[in-house]
Image 1 (tube, helix red, strand yellow):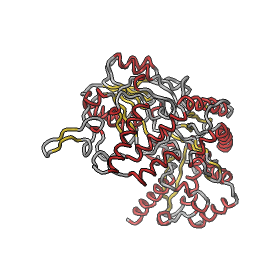
Image 2 (cartoon, one colour):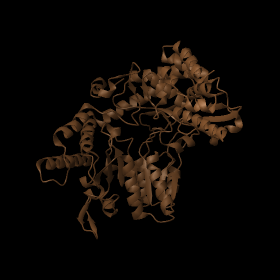
Image 3 (tube, helix red, strand yellow):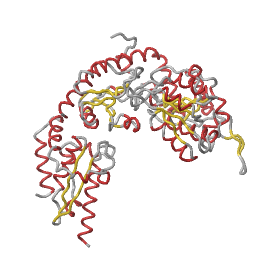
Image 4 (cartoon, each protein chain N blue to C red):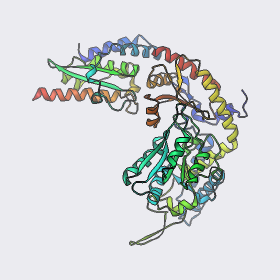
Length: 408
Length: 141
C-alpha cells in the first residue's frame, strides 16, 4: 500500500480511538454518522471557554471584541477554504439539518407557490428530503424524485427529464450517506442552471473527504455539518450565493439579526447576520475552523487518495465472505461500504460486531426510501475516515465472517 | 414455576458461559424455541414499535393466565423475546404486572435494557406488562 498519510501519527491525535470496548481495541467505522475529534479541536474549544468566552458582536469590552474577531476570522477562513465569493455568504447554523430547513423555509417563501415542484434525488438523507416534503405539503406543491439505478447512481437522464417539468428548486446530495455514491453534482448543477433553477447541494458527507470549490461547482447553496469533519457537534454551515441570500426573507427572528427595532417594525441586519438570530455557538465555530485547518494541512488530495485505498481494500477483503452483497456499487464512490450477508438481519450482525469492538451503523441510515428502493430492511454500514487502517478492515472482515457463522 | 424461579433457571443456564460469544450463541439458540405467533396475527397491529428489527407479539388470555406468542426477523432479537416469553407466558396478570426482571442484568444483557438501544426490549416489556394490566382490569371487573 502506498499512502502519503502518516496514519499512525494521525491516530495519536484522536484520543477517542485509543480505548478498549468490551476489552477489545475500538475499531471505529461509523464516520459517516460522526467523526472523532483531534486534540487540536478539543483544545481550541477548551481554550475558548477558559480564556475567551464572551458574547460577540455587541460588547465594547476587550473580551467581546477578541471573541468577535476570532469568530469572524473563522468565517473568513471557511469562505476562503471553500472558495466562496464573499465571507458574508457563510452562515453559521446548528448543522446540515438546520441549513436545509433554513433554505427550504426561506427560499420556499420566496419562490414557491401552489402547484410548483421541488426536485430531489431518490438517495437523499431524510434531512434533505423531509424539509422539502413538508414545504410541499404546506403550500400544495409537489416533490419530484430522480430515480436511482441498481448500482445506486442517480439516473441523470431521468433527472434531466424532471428538470423539464420546471421545478422551482433542486436539492441534491453530494455523496449518499447510505450508499457512498458520489453524485456528478457539477454536471447536475449545470443542467439545472440551463433551466435557471437554483441548486442546493447537501455536502454533509463530502466535506471531510474532498475539497469543495463554490466557484467551480457554481451551486447556489452548499450545506454541511461540523461534526462530520472532525469538528464539534452543534455547528454547521450554509453557504449561499449573495444574490439569493439578499433576496431571501429571514428564517428565525430575535437578537443579532436586526438593524432597527421598534414595537411597530423591525429592519433587518445585513448578511450574514440576517440569518444568524440569537447567540451563535462561538466555541464550536472556532473548533470548526481548527478542524478544517487540520484537514487542509493533512491535505484533501492525500485524504481522498488514502480513503480510496481503504475503500478498495475493504471491498476486496469483504468480498471473500460467503453470501455478502454490497448495496451501492456506484462507479464513483466515497469510503462507505453498505452490505448484507445472506438473509442475516443487519441488526444481528451489528450487535455481534459491536461485541467484537467494531462500531458500525445498522439500519436504514435515515434514508428509508433508499432501503425501499432496494427492498431491504436496512444495511450494515462501515464508513471510513483518515485515521482508519488496513488492519482495522482485516478485523472487520474477520468479525463479519465470525458473526455470519454464528447467525447462519 | 414462578416468574422468580424461571429467572433463576435462566441465570443458571447463562452462568455456564463466561465468553459473550457463547452467551449470544445461547441466546440465538433460545430464539429458535420461541412459541411462534400465528400467521394471522403477524400484522402491523401486533408490531412492537421502537425496534430496528421487527417484533410481532400476541397475547392470549386462558384460565386466568396470559400466554404469549411472538416472532422477529432478527435472530438475536428473537432470542431476547423468548427470554421474556419464558418468564411471562403462563403467568397471571398480577404476577406479570408486578414482576421485577433482575435476571436481564444478571445474565449480562443489561445493555439491551437501555432505552437508547433500538432492539425494543424495553418496548417489549412495556407491551407485555400492558397486556397484563388490561387483563387484570378485565378480571377485576
